Length: 236
Length: 259
Image (cartoon, rainbow over all chains, first blue to last red; front, top):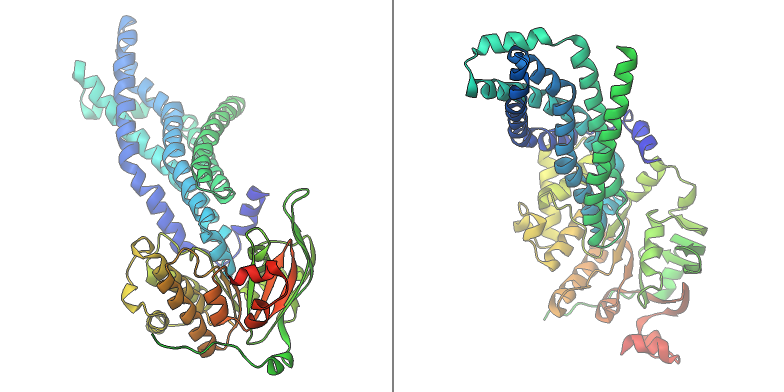
């Protein structure tokens, strides 16, 4: 019902453009530092951990391609989505839960304003759009982290590293991985909003809404990832 | 202290006025065996101020939430301005809600917005053609009417309980409602602030000629503002009348409200 209402309301006017932009700013822009640091560490650590194994087979030259592929196809989307589930999903759950408990949602409704459209639709749209952007950002920073990691023990030029990265990537590596991030974003927003919007009375339910939002969204991310991998495998 | 005359009107005059709110056989339960309202009948006439009294859990808040469509009744009819709210679609219900103001127990101010934005938000939604200057003027005028013009740029977290109630009332008033529903407007406030809020309610009733339903446990507020009082017990009205009439009622339980 909650999801069906989203698809019903999203195309109906009035379009809450201002609130949507505000949410994009809060959800996306404010998450860039956290996602950036995490992405950099992912790339750096992945490079440092993979290097000895590849060196044993004399395949160190594959390192840039392997790091880029691992990050773009799997690690960056999933880790970034999990971070977003923790930061954004819990934030939405707690914010809406608190609004519900303090009757702010009811106040909106009795003022003749559609709270679902104003609060839920805008947040779900914002997460659906911003999570993929955050993942792309994490990919880029992660690949840069890989470059730093390689240069801790070796000496590879920036240009050579990135030409190796780009030559190892294909359309099939980027598109399915990007598509699944839209689903990650959608479900992070949806689950956060659902738990917050339907929070019971009492302050305890605010914490419960935030907690359930994170746990459910994290689990959903893994399920979507599993399905996405299976589908990619079928079609490509 | 400024003496303010009570809002009591001549019952004869009120009796000739058509009801703006009419509730017939209202039933509402939450789960099996937890019936809150058991066939409530109630009418409120235009310009009248009705005070609903009753113990906690007697169904007072549920009743006014049913009037604005926040709670869906199990059974019964609620007519507001001649429309049965149970038969209205979302668009019609929202149009009706603009004519009804609702002051929540804790004011329910939007935490993430300043006082100005709290007032601006519903106003701009329902009057999109108003210029920014007109909106600003209306906000200032409304804030002045509740005596809080200086709080315009404050966040709700910076306001005291009494101030929050006043801002909540200002947010309600800015849409110029014909009916105002007050859910325990003086609860949690000290005696002096409670008196000030009660006087403000009375002032609003006189100035804007609104029809009001006030839910309260504060008998001073009930005495000052109410034209008529009803007492709810177990989901039905057990007593009805003016303050003085109920104060001298033979029933000990009813008299206990006035002690």
